[in-house]
Amino acid sequence: MSRELLNTLFVLTPGAYARLDGDTVRVEAQGERLLQAPLLHLGSLVFFGGATPSAPLMERCARDGRGITFLDGAGRFQARVVGPTGGNVLLRTAQYEAGADAGRCADVARAMVAAKLRNGRSLLLRGARDCRSEEGREALREACSSMAVLLTALPGADSLEVVRGVEGQAAALYFAVLGHVISRPPAEFAFRARTRRPPRDRVNALLSFLYAILTSDCVGAAEGVGLDPQVGFLHAIRPGRPSLALDLMEEFRAPLVDRVVLGLINRRQVRPEHFEERPGGSVMMTDDGRRLVLRAYQEHKQEEVVHPFLKERAPVGLLPHLQARLLARHLRGDLPSYLPYVARQ
Image 1 (cartoon, one colour):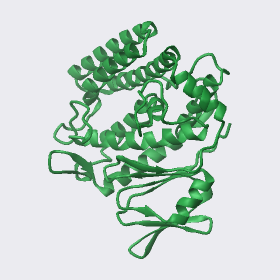
Image 2 (image 1 turned 90 degrees about the vertical axis):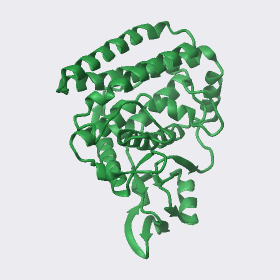
Image 3 (image 1 turned 180 degrees about the vertical axis):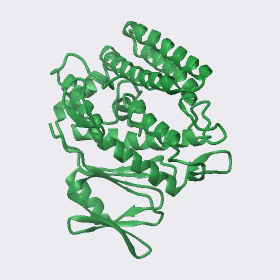
């Protein structure tokens, strides 16, 4: 199992142009070089609205198996360039067969939702310990107790619809109290509910932006082990929807994204001037805000944790790839069940 975590190159500058220069990628804007990086060290490239790669660079990345993702200025997915389908056709066949089996779908989905609940609950419990408000501490503890009840009931969820219902209840509990983990004044960073498409406040803008990046990471993780990112278990199949990537990311929302977002806010690294309100009430990050957030996310991905099943240290950014590989082992019949990622308490 490869343990190498390659970097992701994010090109945010509007109008920036990335081209192939030998075995490196060179990014320019307005005739000036912004950076030059060896392709050898890059696992993927992400272009935000207005930034583009050259055709030779896209061809080289596709040939090497290096994904290119296009996001709009708000971080919403637009398109993805990949090379020829590779991997093991037998593995994809096993994935399709499992995806068509309601019982196996429910089993995998149940494991993923259980991990999502545990990881989200851990974040809230940690927030309760640090919360300065008695009201906030009480709300967080009550939500954690209710999520524990859902965890207890989850093994009895005998259909995919019931599993999805539990996941929905848990998400409602989680986001109803997440604002109590934020120590900044509400006038700067208030969070009352999850809003998306578009986000209606600064916290939601941060969450939506990094969830989009995490989705891209999980698409790459699924493709990297030969799985079809479109065919999921928890998320229904829809045209153009990376259902399996959305499945994988459920385990990582709290430990990979929410933790970074809350840290940036509570450490006062991200500030109100990093956001702008658009007509209609949507809130987006500025270019400077996106750079700051991506830098923090990349740094977090380099941190190492002990994988609870593999019992080995691994960079946080490698976790989606490790979980995709464990899922592949389950689908091939090497593991009796899917073992989701649960962060240490």
